[in-house]
Length: 201
Image (cartoon, rainbow, N blue to C red):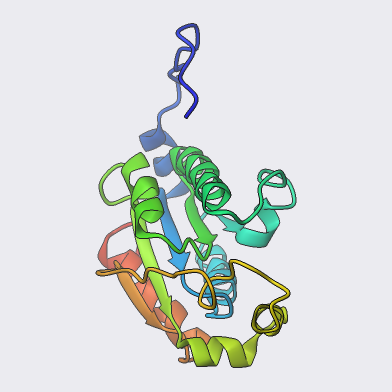
């Protein structure tokens, strides 16, 4: 792991996170959607972002495929690259929370240690793990990108759920059953955000 250069010093901004949150009218937080490929992470996160936007909440959605087009385009799918992918996303999410945004992320993030790593970057209560719990058989039946078919045929190696492990959350902050209606799942998350007083009821 690279060490910090002693000449690199954190610069404190004149405008604080609390002031930005006050301007937005809500707190900053990360909603970390995790689950198998095809579980519905991106679909739920996208629908939720629309609902939050309509409610006047300032958001940003970080999607697994999108960040690999730019920020993480140099990374593959080895365990080391997957870990670095999540680390980078976590650091970006932390910056966006500092800007007072509600950040939604949709990443398989198969290892508990990596999800904990991101949680540890943030202040208590800012990281909300959302487990989109969809059975492997259902994900494989959906197979929106045809990845399970390739993995079963041996054309795609190190694929989560087939020949690479997925460590489901032991106690997710929000547990969604991925076969339920999208509107129901969004309502469940919105209710929890209101309960935590991150957004207003």
